[in-house]
Amino acid sequence: MSGEIQSAYLAPEGLHEPLLKEVDGVIAVHGQLVLSSEPFINAHWAQNIWKNPVTLSIDSINDAAKKLKAIQLNWCLYSFTLHRRAKLIEEKLNPSKPKHMSFPTSLPLQRIGSWCLLDENTLLASANCSNPFRNGEPSFIEDKNGPPNRAYLKLYEALTLAEKTPKAGEFCLDFGGSPGGWAWVIHKCGAEVLSIDRSPLDEKISNLKGVAFQKRDAFSLLPEELKKEGRSVDWFFSDVICYPEKLYDWLLVWINSGICKNFICTIKLKSESTQDIIKKFSAIPNSKVVHLFHNKNELTYFNLGHTQEK
Image 1 (spheres, rainbow, N blue to C red):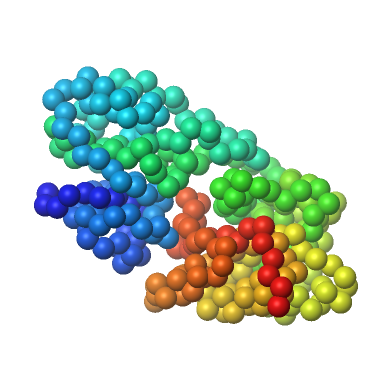
Image 2: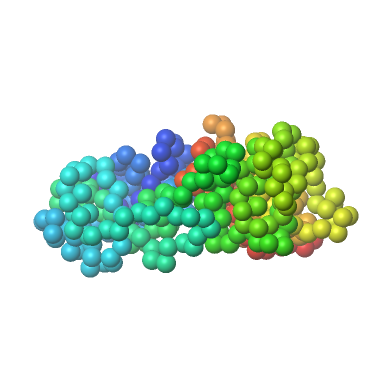
């Protein structure tokens, strides 16, 4: 392997291509792990970013564990080669078993580092990773009865990473909400929600107290309509299926209106989508664009706790 490894990126399963378009200086790709000779960037398509990793020479399993413990105690293995040797090292680290989390939950207090074996006597490790979960994979206790689809897990993850949730007394908009997975989460948090979609909500969701529904084109609702009603919006949620350019233009109208505090939106991407539109979302003040573990070929946009007045 030529070149010094300065950063590493764990790609979402099956989504190497968009990540490789973001990352320069690629040295090698091992499974989902992309190694780069360039300093780390906040790559949108990375499930986890290994910032400033170190390469360690090791002469035994005990030596590997000792050197990792000298850096910190909490580690997560990403194994792509020499699996048996890697597993024996992992056992020496006495790792805690991953726990299924109930929602809502706080982020882990102690950040977990990531490591892998490059060969029998070389280990790559980063104590500073972008994602607080093991290999970027949060594991929630699933609800098999309440939500009408699995989209609720995407909002579980987004709100956990946001480190804030809708609360009682708050008003939320849920665009593209059918059949109601996100509305179910918002209701679970105790907030009031108006869900908007061309398709109806599942009956058990529409019957929940505090959940309202309007059958209409999501883009037909603009801030002026709520301003006339004297209403402000605490949370703007969107899982609408549309071209990212259309979402961007519509989102700016809402952000610039100053009527809403918090935004979490799914950016649905097509194969022909370019990095330019993702950069435009990221350039909006106070914004962040990331790939969630529960995302597919899509990214999630965050803009939290800020209003902008004209």
